[in-house]
Length: 143
Image 1: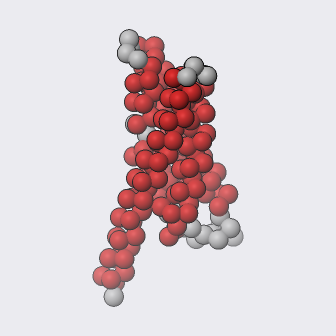
Image 2: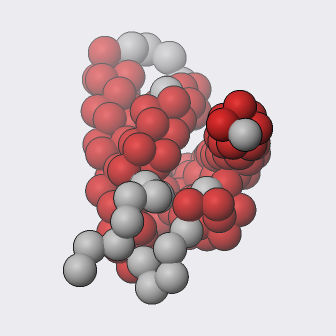
């Protein structure tokens, strides 16, 4: 019986990794698409375009993870707690993303667009760990 429970837990966790990757890819494409479009059409420079892309991608990311990737961990009445925690993780990832972008823009002669896309691509693994272990944690509700 314990073996079956472990198997089911492993199956759920493996599925969560795959789902996280799909939602993460969608959010990353959203971030990159919005930011690069705003940059390329000249609406905004790299940093403001990056912020707009991040904000829209956060909505895609949280919704997908809360309702799909980590649905097996969801607790009734805990959406705002999960969103707040996930926002902290996302902002930390965004700070890392922005630092890398700033370094790219100031230290390399290469195109801003390449730097923007590179800076967006480095955060996903750290975000998964934070989301799984903290933001969407399945610890019992505090009283």
